[in-house]
Amino acid sequence: MTKTKPSKMRDAAVRTLAMPADTNSAGDIFGGWLMSQMDIAGEITARRRARRRVVTVAVDGMEFHQPVYVGDIVSCYTDITRVGKTSITVHVEAEASRGLSGESVTVTEGMFIYVALDAKGHPCPVPEPD
Image (cartoon, rainbow, N blue to C red; front, top):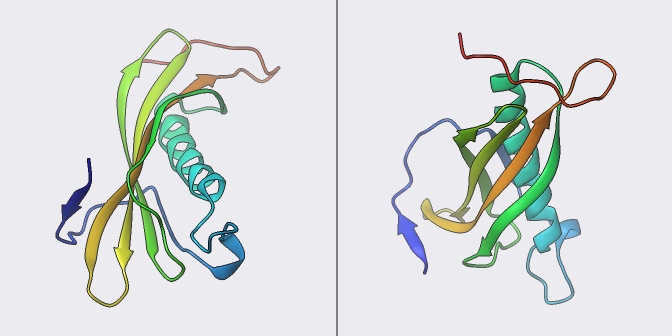
């Protein structure tokens, strides 16, 4: 299912420009590059919530809706969907702003799961929110 929505201002966890060096053999932006941007966005959100270091332990339900093209502005938006004892699940949605039209299209979404770590690198409880 393809989602198209008018461009609107909301806070992106990550926003970047898709460049020619990020393309795959077909000339579109490589899915791994996009997944990396989404993981960074999810980590920023999880780290803020945990108030400590977090690591990615799983990616669940990654879905690519449309390609990303060179010159698209890619914005990643996040929502925390679950907080467990040591884990935080973050839904990440990537949108591409196409050229000068300003049209914003949802291109990819997925669920990223992070675990909070203590100073020794062991899983630790996620603190209650402030």
